[in-house]
Image 1 (cartoon, rainbow, N blue to C red):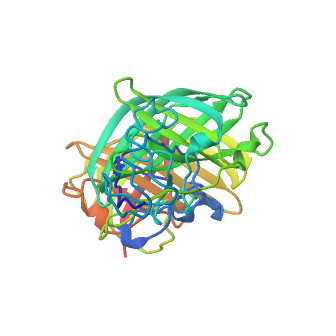
Image 2: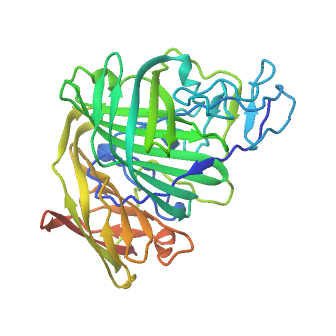
Length: 423
């Protein structure tokens, strides 16, 4: 059965990073410079072959099905292929945690666009076919609508806490998590979510989640990736195969994540193939590998930091996380009119190995009301930032040019960095 080009929604968020080790966004310089580099060369499992950590996958109720091979185009235009008769009827099986509100994907395997594979290029199966591992409720703070950027419509949701409950794990979400939702022009959604958790046994956990949804689906199908100390009783999270759902309840101010062990679940038929719009740069999961010399200064920021959270020696190296609590921004030669604040939230997710790799993710708010998402990633001496802001806004040059970053230097209560145009 074929349903053509289901679009995905996208939330625009600001990520400004001093990445110290786990950048996971792949370096495609053609995409407006938004790249990040994975720390210590660790392969994070996420879109584009990277290993994404933490992720939520949503499965909504099935939309109107089409008979295999019929060539009928369903609502949303997603291309669904498969055999075995007709797809699910309207309403279909609600995705886990969807409370019956999901739509469109039903029991189909969702095949992400090759640029954002969530580590499952052959498709993300219906998570509820696996065994439930945990359910989590995240409490939301502010929602920042970045606007339409070079990639799509970005929205950033602040996570200020939450709880996670399962038969084998109990944990709480720490303040400062980020849910970055991108809605593409065709309606499909690509999601990245980064959270820090503290388990009941005292273990710290980095949860980085990759997700996708077809146009019209309220439930995002996610693939979570975990980093926990190899010595922890929860080390099984490092090697498991998981998928799940992510549902936002705006009225309640929450996000629900349901995550399943899908190690025994095959990515079977029918399949819905997601396609990104043509002629639009793709966001990247991994850090940029680009290099370059410093040109004109763009802006300087002073970032205040919280107490570090040590994950310890894990599957990619030793992870140390430094939460971002605020700061100030001052314009340079290229953007002399820019001034504002560093929004609290996000962190520098440092990966310490033979070299230390920084991966800072956060957002800025300008005095004139714009939001700039920042990812600053790479080893010391080779930090490459990627910016995302409103494409028709006053700082759109951040989307289209390429930049380099100074190393972080000491400042009261945190660090100071300057960004430069890349020569």
